[in-house]
Length: 122
Image (cartoon, rainbow, N blue to C red; front, side, top):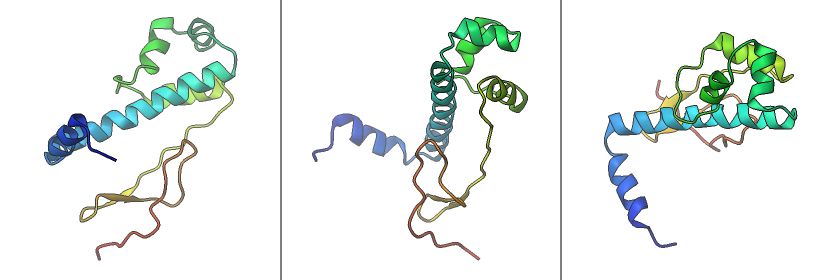
């Protein structure tokens, strides 16, 4: 498949460690936002309905579902999960600095693939 201009640009930008770190954090926030919105929809709730259950504002639910929002607190995520009959699971992954691969015990439920082989520095 031919590389697009954006692919080339992103590849170049990812060489900058600060950009790469920001890009990864944005992906994590995106995952959280999508999961909350998906669970809410599966429960048949509007943002306003969920806000009423949590005794908060619809605007707060909108923020939680915004891919750019990084102010999620663990206590709020737990409240959301409880209201949506779900659970919060936080996973810390070791990063192999040579390959950039992440090693985790198991893949998460939202589709992150565990690498087949990851060597670890000792």
